[in-house]
Image 1 (cartoon, helix red, strand yellow):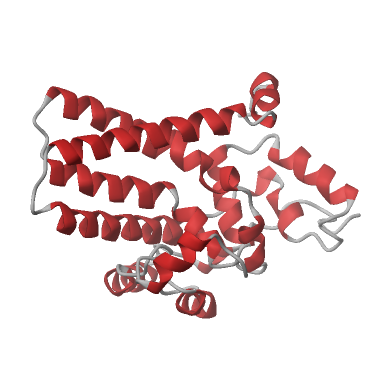
Image 2: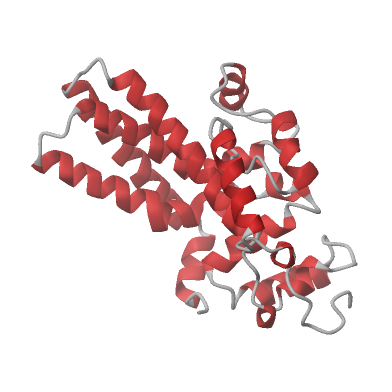
Length: 256
């Protein structure tokens, strides 16, 4: 389904990203208030468990998206196999035309496809392009619902702490992924890598070398658990190599 023109125009002004991300930060800050108001010795373990679960979620999503086929009728193959300059007016016009009729889910799937042959492309994506769909569809609604639940029930502080780590790691998973394909990153990314809360580009390279292991992109703690899952699914035919690239369906994909 095409995005309504009015929403496109509003989004271009930056108001949609600002409002959504502002709501997310405000909601997460409310979680922290509940954590402080309901202290527990279990808060630190819960934070680590929440961060682990966010990492596992990044791996599961990555695993599925990598091998999720792109419907050939969408014309995404025209972008993926384009042979001319991607800075050209022709390509920029083409990507606007194709993406106009692509839903947010298929756009995310396509981003995962393109980052294999052109890894640095993911690092050049804007923050909103990387995390916007995840925040709007999943983490912001879950965060708001959790705040309502915490107001209505004596939800323990450790549970809220785990939720903060999970929602924060889940919201920014694709941003963390993109940071693995950038030479220069904000200092918090570097600091988190130093203490092991985020993985290094060298660790992530193991995934690109095979495309069949180490799918997690946050800290990598869950990779030893998810690698056997993928191996089992691959043997059963759940993940097929044909899904790694968009199917060629459009003629003259290299037309300029």
